[in-house]
Amino acid sequence: MKKIFSIICLSCLLASVTSCDDFLTETPTVAIPTEDAFVSANDYTIALNGVYYTLGTYRFLGRDIQALGEVASDNSDHSAATSHFYNIFSYQILNTNAYLEEIWRYGYAAIDRATRIIVAGESATDMEGDDMTTINYCVAQAYGARALSMFYLTNIFGLPYSDANKSSLGVVNVTKTIAPFEKVERTTVEENYRQILADIAKSKEFYGKEGVEDAQYIHMNQAAVAALEARVKLYMQDYAGAINAAHTAIELRDGMIVSTAGEYWQMFKELLISSEDIFVIAKSETDYLSANSLNTLWNKYGVSLNKKTIDEFADTDIRKSLLIAASWDGGKLGGIATNNQIQNLPVLRLPELYLTLAEAYAATGNYGEAKKNLLEVAVKRDASYAAEGVKEDASIMAVIRQERKLELAQEGHRFFDARRWNEVIDVANGTLKNFDVAKFQFPIPAKEVNAGAGVVQTPSWDANLPK
Image 1 (cartoon, one colour):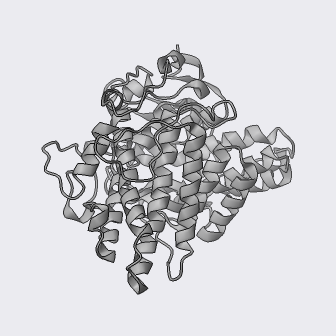
Image 2 (cartoon, rainbow, N blue to C red):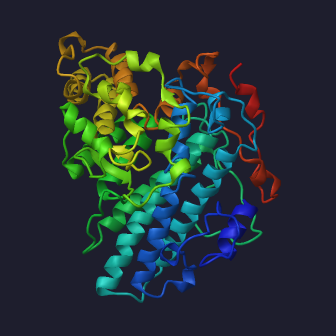
Image 3 (tube, rainbow, N blue to C red):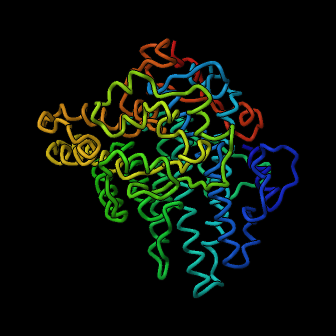
């Protein structure tokens, strides 16, 4: 942590670096001031742009996290023709893995940048009027972005939340800027989740301040904050909390699930915000990362949705044509029609919320509501879906899990879902069988441990690799 946070703390505004892979190689529009450099409301807006830049870089939500969520699961096949994510796919994992280093580094960069806005904004007592409204608007989003980043880091480098795992090592909670050479330490998974929920609550508090308007769907808007809360509480098995948050998010979004093949293709093949989008990493016709894009990973670098998963879609399912069409290599993530290296990347979407409701209602024995919310997605995607065959009893949980697997395929959910459901899966093109994925957590990057700032490695993390 010393290595990461000393760089962040000492080089807050504009760093002079030589590596094109360093996150500090940025334009001034995304430079992050130190707390005492937040002089005007515009400083907060500029700093917030930097938070979204960091969230959306390919080293974090713009590629690495969503890729890991698929290639480390049983949803994907891969070819050794390229090295991109192949070691993670095949579980030939070392604590020096470059992608894990990027996720850790840029996750904490996003957290640090959000924290600077929060610390300055919480103490901005000399501002008033429209300036204070702008600051509160930025602070609300900063809290949401920090919670989102912490959620992913906790679930990659810590075990899934459960009574048995709550006291296990998670990641480092950050609520203030870290000074150079300051000692830090990992806290427990339970403490990480407590911090995530606290940040979500603060985001809602700041959105509720006088004059603060909602953000767009390319930012952590109010529906996105509620959707994140629903996901977090579902992972925690707080089903009542997940239900309340999901209903809130659905009401705030006021969107709809599409039901035609044309509408479904349009969601992934154009740069427009769809009626299902809640928060996306937004791209533009001139904003693409070529070999570093998530789209390129799926349409050029050997990763594909595996045939077993594709075969689980009915032929009448509107999702299937996009996933298997030869002219659209890469499925959902094959890029837009005019450029296969550009695409908005979904992070929070409306269908996830209905399936959260379905799962949470089923877990609490309300099978009628579980079926209602399941069908809100399933029947829209497949008009021939056999709704009458879905029983209103405990057997519905397996149906909900299957629908979630299909609906969210390629969006980075499968690895995390399999872990929290305690599923035993086959990975690496089926060569590694009966993997008890719930017991596995990725190692803390060696660079962080070796920096000597207090972050320790997970003991015997490699003992739970698939054999």
